Length: 73
Image (cartoon, rainbow, N blue to C red; front, side, top):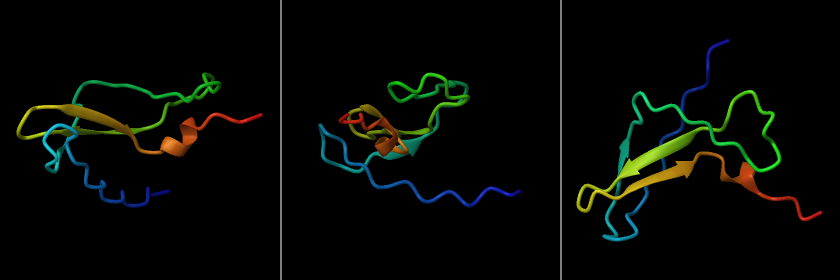
C-alpha cells in the first residue's frame, strides 16, 4: 500500500534569533523517540530537525508530541 504524502513541516522560529529555521536532515543518524511507558514499541516516533541559518542552533521536534503526554491516572 503506498504511503500518504508527507504534510509540509511547520515553520519553526529560532529561540535565540527569532528568525525562521531551515528544515534539515539527520543523514546517517538513526534515532527512535519512545514515549514514557511505551518502551516495547517496535519503532519509535519520527522527529524533524531544524537549523538556524544565523546562529547555528539545532532543534529536534517530535512530529507527534501528543504521543508523549503522560496519563493523569
